Picture: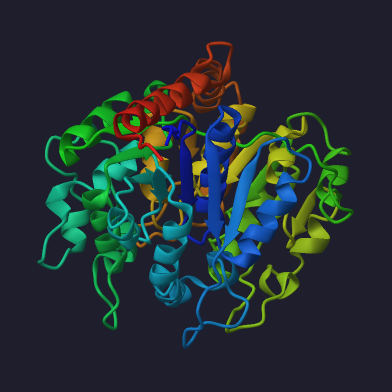
Length: 472
């Protein structure tokens, strides 16, 4: 019988059930598919339906595969994403994800991809893949500064991780600026602890590091060379940057509701609007909403504020009931508070937007840099505090809002930060504008930076594939 060689590389992508994770996995999938890699994208039915809609007008050939979540006590029917539930219910969602371990094994047996690329939550994916001789690649959708600060082996210990541990950088960390503040460390410490017999978030991440063949990370040398080198030395495995992976502006037409924000922006002067948004998973308290509202009002500037609530919440939420008395009437002529899904890329690309007041999520930072929008940073949880120090203090691409010791902020904190960045005749405003322009050009200019990183990843995949390719 003649020998047939399997030459096309086949990669299975498997992200965590959060839009902030699905998005980067999908962007990497598109780039790999565009270079002739066979890509299978795996998620739950509701998430796959959203991705299928994105592919309708696109030319990438990506196979979409569904695995339904099992029923788990405490998880409402129809919940398949962190955007649907408050933060305290994420542990239940992870338990449901763990129920996919056996179905995932059966799927791998049928598909037999050359590689799996998995997220931190499904730490078991590497073990399952190893049964079929399939190498696992751990995709860190965070930046290298945050990843090396948190995933340093010194933090993988049996003893309790304390607030005091977390505010101190790991040994020989290449920055004195990037660190958690005490109020942030108090918030993040529980992710190092097991709860009700469930494996901790950080145990999942450390197991993912230990089980993978190598790591790919959504970063680049132009932004984080010293952190990338430090991370690779610390964990003792190859760390391959794949670039920031910003999405392209969608080609499909927006719905009537989605275009509402853009029509409002059309009426505003160029570079005048403060766009405030805190991502799909960050939900503000009533006190935070009040301080932010009064701060935006105090700037005297036009603003577009996207204010979201979880789909399944213990409390009924209404925008009007949470805003300060009289706020809507006083700002009606220059402000819009929008509580539906908003097309962030199109908003940031709109010529009337001048400043992005953001929670410092890495995806939002990358999008702002690509579109040249100045950043005001208001980190709320998880990785965002470390992101804000990297972006504000190390890279000088934005200005972080000052906080009280307990993490609270006032309307004056908001107003002061926004006005400093807006005023280009002051040091902060001039510096941020200049640095954003320089970074935008170095990463997204004519240098082919993005293409370089994808080509490097494909060369690594191809080299390993050719060493291990099999004859049918």
